[in-house]
Image (cartoon, rainbow, N blue to C red; front, side, top):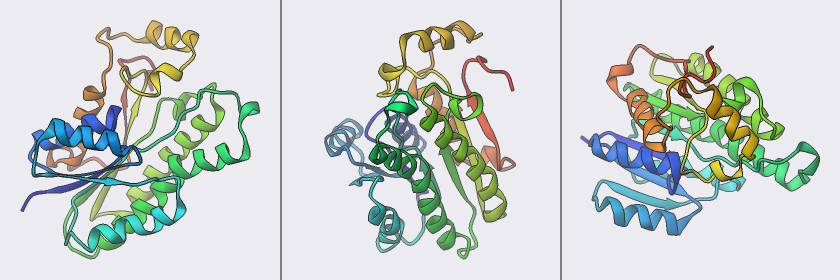
Length: 242
């Protein structure tokens, strides 16, 4: 039976690259995003009967509460969850409205709580082994000019480590922590002086593309990472040695 993986924020950037990489590794991919046009483009590009696309807004609390249970109404089991959906505004904390603060925390952190919990509740009783991969950011480790973004991504790191304990041994939980990733919606919102700072600190000079992060995600989903859980894997060209 094909391994089935759910990827949120799959219409563009890292999520889209992860979907394509998983398909290349013979996964059945359930790709979710609020960008329905982007999902349709992904479906056309992939041309695969192993790809299912779902329009879903992870800023909506009712979606968070029903998304995973509705999947299990159609799928007996799932083997992986990639929590990739996220928001970045690249603005000062002084410029955030109450609505933007709520949306940021819901998409970037609360969605991971609900989706991971519901996935684990089902799969921990199945007797199999599964993997959750959370997409955080170097901003969660070293800070960000966008304080709300940095705070939520720091929360993802804490949640990753806690859930690795909570869901063991049935489910491994790890995170990828990218730095400056080109060809993403976030890239163009990063202030120019911050982009130059990231580039200056990179000690490997091949620019990081979404496909490079996707390769690490696929590794963490698969058996070759079977001894890893609670880990945060930096994908940053060595810019921030830990």
